[in-house]
Length: 250
Ligand code: 6PG
Image 1 (cartoon, helix red, strand yellow):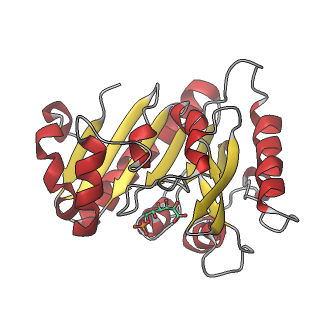
Image 2: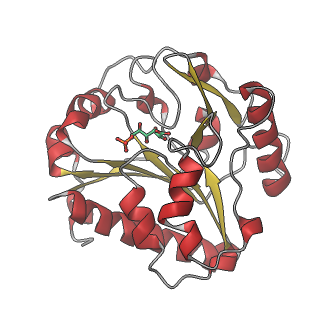
Image 3: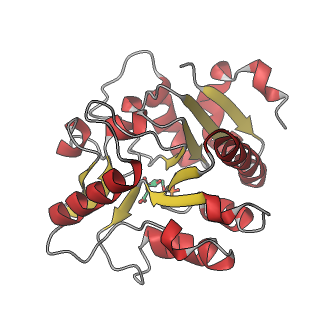
């Protein structure tokens, strides 16, 4: 599907637009299927988005929270994506505890954690044998090396096709990450990128030809909607990709 590309004037406008898009997707999923499943991104970019979502009046009992990736640290560690999302959003809304599915990071090994999270997803979605489950919303960021989730350049995780969850590797540090096939099954995959330091990655991700092993976000080609919400500082290389028909979306 052709990506929906929107370049917002600044980070504040980016977060406002991301909130709008996410809430619309949440309400549509709930209207269509009675619930919404969303996988959260880590890092710094989505934190203000999570704080803004927490201010919304949403049917929290119908919203189910997963993570697109997680650092291999306890949830009370400052690097924990779960910890960040709980502090910014989940601790401030009456979402049932059982609707939150954090990545286990205290198993005996990252591989065991990945297998456990895979079981969690399979138990929830009950996928048929030949089809990966579809999350309604998958939020993603990109690194300045064009990684996304914990799919880092030239790592084995990029090529895992027979699982939903695998072990990522960031400079030798283990991560737990959804796999490319699972992300590409998402109904709405929404990338957020802000800051001039993301320009190089975006140039390579959108280039007609570039090596996906070097620029892993190129592997994200979902069947469903693909959104790129970027601020002007990051989005200079994308000016020619902006879909004019969506500019009116403000
Ligand atoms: C993580 C993220 C990672 C992040 C990018 C961008 O666990 O860190 O999932 O993929 O989205 O590294 O991070 P920033 O938003 O901080 O630039």
